[in-house]
Amino acid sequence: MKQRILIVNSGGDCPGMNAVIRAIVKRANQEKNWEVIGSINGFDGILSEPLEIIPLTEKRVEGIHIQGGTILTTNNKRNPFCYPVKQSDGSIINEDVTDKLIYNLKVFNFDAVIHIGGNESHKISHKLSKKGVNIVGIPKTINNDLSITDFTFGFQTAAQVATEAVDKLVTTASSHNRVLILEVMGRDAGWIALHAAIAGGADVCLIPEIPFSMDKVLEKLKSRYSKDGRGFANIVVAEGAYFKNNKSDKNSDSIARKIASKLKEANFEADIRETILGHLQRGGTPIAFDRILATELGVKAFELVKEKKFGTMAVHQNFELTHKNLEEVINQYNKVDLSHNLIHTAKGIGISFGD
Ligand code: F6P
Image (cartoon, rainbow, N blue to C red; front, top):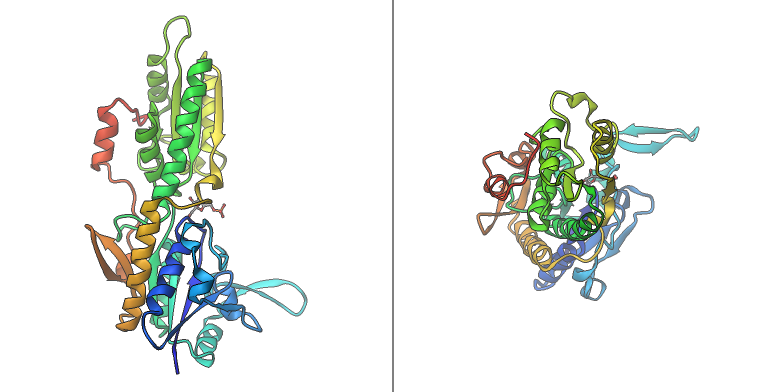
């Protein structure tokens, strides 16, 4: 009988998810006795009755590495330890359904699970591993917020999209003598903002790791304008950035909008406009870097399963493809270290962090 691997992706999608699925399938098919199955919509597929799973043949995954999204669909609200279950009266109650999950894996002869996810997803991987599930993780997310791996796939594509947005905004800001504010994703990490600010040539970069002062931002903006109001400026702000001394205000509204209204309150003379880039950063074709990284991690994850190295995650560290135990992975959130060379580089070309 063939050995069966179930692929589950969870959390938000990101460019490269299809490339990783294809790599697992292609690598498994080089062995005689493996078959790969995909769970639809995260853990839903393996938990639903009847199961919603699809055989992932080489034919099915042909050419998908260049496609954005995931052919399996995904969900960031399907934690099997706290899973929405419809009750007989129609109400929904969150329940721990991991016993059912483990039962289904056994009954349907799954030997292992490869779980593709971000920071929160791998906390689930770790808990499932402790309950005896043969699980191997693969890191993904546009946020690049998992410390254990040099880069998560999806991040470089998102940084590219954000950079292209800065490029466009710079031309229109300069044509109208405006201040344009671009808000990018990243959760509690400023990686996308930092990369886009340097690559696109922003004047101000605001990230969650450096709480900023509006006075400092204003100082930088004023330096970009002549006395007769000619000039322009571009701000890149990470969605998780916040004002110094006002952490409680974090996440209550778009930070780009808050900055725009503070600039208006301060009677800053130039026209101000804000753009929230949103899910454009998550969709679309992965750039070559992310396709390659995803492919490397897919091949490695299959090999970890084959070697029965469960409870681990395939990672890329210091240009080496390797693996780490899940418990090491989940405790380290990858924030931008203030001594990181990119902070130094950004300051070196005059980018203000509002500090
Ligand atoms: O974790 C990826 C991410 O895109 C974050 O950057 C962002 O904060 C969040 O997901 C958005 O989630 P949703 O797609 O549920 O709006």
